Image (cartoon, rainbow, N blue to C red; front, side):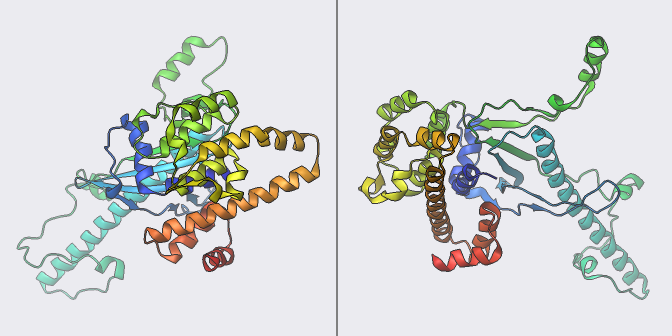
Length: 378
């Protein structure tokens, strides 16, 4: 995972921005997803049972939230990519299928517990000795006031799958967020990855394509202009800048037209500086403070005047080791600043030190010891 992904995912950990992202790209800015209704959810999917042809690898979501609205549950997730993945639709489908698999497993376990409790209840009424059951099975407590024992399953089909006709799973919605600068030329659905046949088989190919159960991928390319009118948070500022990383003229026009860049909150300003390569802001942050905000407009203009972006790229291409070392030092300083903001933001939101340490390991590829050291230093 590249630095761009780490920075943007850290920024999207805020529930307000996370909700804003989904509302903009799914609901044209309508506030359907509300930040207060989003709950933390485990990003880790346990390894399936190992077997022939099964590596048993875990899958870890970049960000995952539970949306509990009106008594209904929905799963929202974001997967970020700094490089083009030519199997991304399959990966998204795999994540979603594992989520559905976990939900089905929980329902089946609940039904098994209900069936075990039913057997205990029947044996108790018949005066038979009650066998010992596992803690998992005994966790289900039947209502003592029920006068008639009702079956868990209506027929053999429900019992076979341990899944009843009335059982339901929560829908999963996944956004793939591409943060790279190269134009996305990869597949946008599972169908784009499939070979239905070559030339000379057009008629047969069309038939097979027509019957294929496709799995589309909801892709957001941060290097492409988006309609920012639906954003209600500073996330719109970030998405407006990213397509202009190599377009100085367009960047100047944007800065002249939108006054929002003259007064950014600290977290947004830091995120923009890391994504846009504005080194001068990280080094002299207080220079750009104006009241309770930061003037990123001035910082970006100074960056463009110094031609830092082109200079670093040209220095690397010419093999200038000194220029590369300077750039690497700056990158480390930027990362350290990003980690500081990340920790402070999560502490302000009431996150536990253990939870913050887990996210540091996931987003910044830290070891457990390094994550604990980072928390102590801040």
